[in-house]
Length: 213
Length: 377
Image (tube, rainbow over all chains, first blue to last red; front, side, top):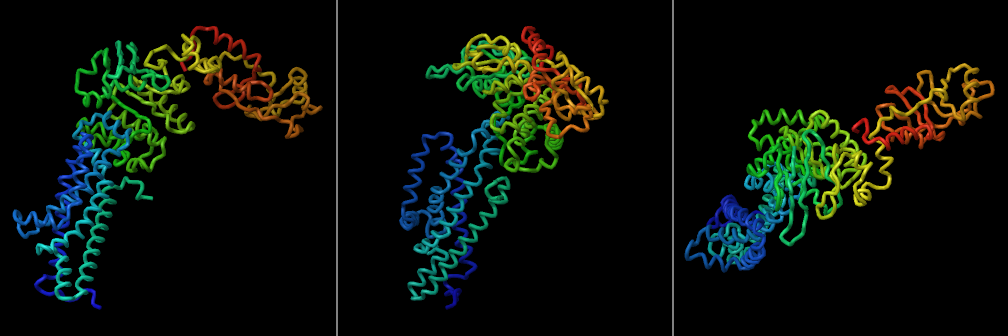
């Protein structure tokens, strides 16, 4: 069996499918991160809002993506945006708790030292708190990225599923080889992105002793 | 000079952390706050750089109220050393030391140059500069902590149990190093510890605090050991305060006798003459370095020290350096010696003379009766 068979031309090429898959998955994670950082910092600053925030994110995460796509179509149409918005919300469920744990997990003596050195709040956040929270933030990013790369394919129900289109075509054309190819491509993309994130983290945190051993 | 004026801290639930306290930490001196946990010593310290605000009273540094400028600005002008060093794990050693200069707006070049200098000052090597904190031992990390606190040359240094978390050998090194640094830098140091021995070793003055932030006594270490004001202070000082106080007196007053000392090449006649007068002879080599004690009975009949059986020479234990070391070191030398005699040596290790425990007593008596020691440490 040919693992990478010729794809019917109306579906696009391997290149265009990879591009679509990554555009939707990565931009949703990016938007998620942009929302997650301030939201998580608010939760650290006001611990009382953290439980309701987590509960809300969990509820959102439990909503079926198909339902959300359908709900969004009237306003955003049959576009990639319709796929990106729900996935961005899903990624919050992985990102926010990791950022909160990361910032909270900064050793007490490091925090005290930063205050005693004369850091102001904002500068301490940027120079000390966030850099030290990079490992847990990266862990959250890895979960969100891999999850979203997979979930993008559900977009095929509104016609923008990238490799997801192969699954629809497999059913319609009775060609299971297309489904296998879709799975292989999605898993490969997920693994490659995960690896790139691991490498990025190593470059960002040369000070992290757990990885240097 | 740091003055605490009627400084108190009461928490909203009514817990008193610090009872109204008056205390002055002299400029260029080490003032130690010592007490059990819950005695408010760390609270007092952290009030100086406003990490905790007092509920009553005021704190002045060289006459200026600490509240007169914004807290972050105040803190950049005060060195702070914390237990476990509290280094920033994501920064190299050099970048850690550069923290305060950068906050003060120094140029990178100036900050780097000064930080490199401090790295060497605290006894680390240039090669440590680019390491990360996890690559250093606990003792090295704390040296970096001290460098980071000192780099912007603040007049005041706050030290919050800085050496509590390192092992005793390293702690001893760090304490010695701090005293060496202080003799050069003459900072106004406020030092918190729960270890009374550390307080006595480091402090020019020691404030003993009791539970609830009550200042029980504020005196020089020698005064504290000689005249504890109450049972709490006496109990806190421990059982052997009399012996410990001897470390504040020079061993110069010890009467050392040269008669029991015989060199390996001393003529036989002379050796035999000495033997009859001394129960123990200390054999020294041609440079007067000690070799061992010899019981008079074991001196060969012909007085030839070359014939002494190796097993008859008894280890001389510890020696003490006359003048440079304290009466306590002399007493220790005598107690540890099998002959019950202390061996005094000069700066080159050559024997000056010996003194028995009994012969040490008058010097010890004089020290305990005298009101103040002749040497401060």
